[in-house]
Amino acid sequence: MRRLQRHGYLKEERTRGAMESVPRHLFVPENLLSSAYVDSPLPIGGGQTISAPHMVAIMAEAADLKGGQRILEVGAGSGYHAAVMAELVRPEGEVITIERIPSLAERARLNLSAAGYSGMVEVVVADGSLGFPEKAPFDRIVVTCGAPEIPEPLKEQLVDGGKLIVPVGSMGYQELMRLTQNGDEISVENLGGCVFVPLVGEHGFHLR
Image (cartoon, rainbow, N blue to C red; front, side, top):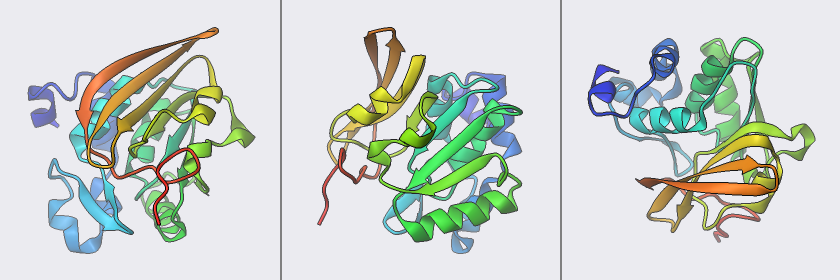
């Protein structure tokens, strides 16, 4: 964590505390345990990855997470990012994370349970590009996969004052965007380049 702070990725003590509280080794495949705390994305199966710690820090701080918020994550992966966000919105907050690949969703549930977060994070199998209208609106929506454009359903599921963090671009390179809902207006900020696996779905990429 000190390295992330030195390089300017990790600025807030709350975020550092949350990331130090989550045992990242419980969220990586067994054959990659020796790399669990390396600042690099790691494969978790199904063509998906667990994000590098620096990117988790950047997205968590960009989302400005606070206790008691309702959070939607699109792209559960192994469950690690959801656990970090759960730490930042506890004790009254709620995290719902969507995963399109059933086997990964089940593994995320097991990982979250092993780490003690099963009661704080709900894992849903669905098309994340549609959001989760059953529990909308959300204070924050964090997308951990790259979209070709900002999905309209996600904009519509923000509370007034809510923020949406989403990588937007091609399947090989994206820009991390932060949208803030202000009444009838939406402000958009570009937070810099990044590379994520693609968001696949009705409002994402259409892969064969």
